[in-house]
Image 1: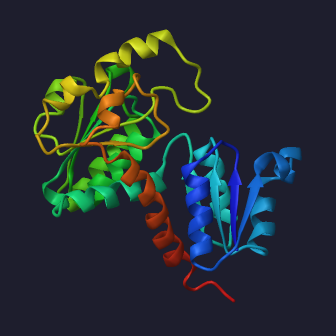
Image 2: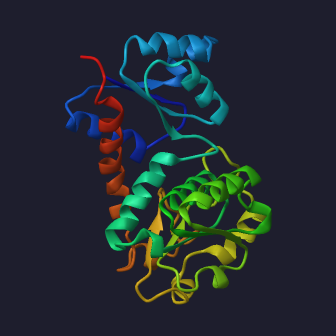
Image 3: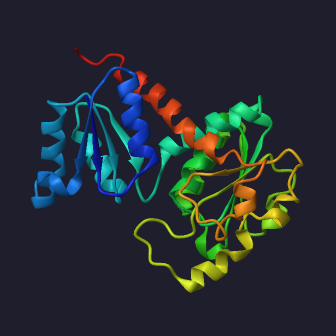
Length: 267
């Protein structure tokens, strides 16, 4: 039995975990945070202890990384980060799976992320560091990754030989890139700001920017996408886009994650 505790909207995370668990012969309970006693003041710790007696694992999609970690510290069952404001590791698993399908040597691949230094950028940088790839996060200085995320990536790369970098110049960043990656400019819960949009305009993945990368370069996006904003419609729907393959791989990567975590679950 898998519980999905969500306080944010979801398409790919919710549906892929649900379908994946059904494929594996399990059951799923969707638990909106507002419908649990959490919404009436029950503590995170009490909720974690109670649900540990009912379920075999939970996926939590929420705002605060601290709340997720507080839950996991008390939980007696596996806790999967389905997205927080700081990290999106399940997306990163499917990202690196997708990259491996188009490049057979992850230590010789260059992945460039363009846009806001957000939770997706953080987890992408970390997973690329884990497998020894070259990863560049290219953002305006005002929207760069937080310092702790960069420190973590560099600590990981010290043992894997990965090359991690932060840049502000899109043209310089995408040179000889194998994959260009982007995300929405305004994450869930963020107010749309003309100032932020102006900062990010040069980081749009369009035909001109794609032409500066390798001819074999592929384009990625974690979705949902705003065509014409962070990515040009013709690029996202064009022959070099692997966006929808990447989205499908959320299912396959998460099934493997569930198998790994639940293989020793009690009957």
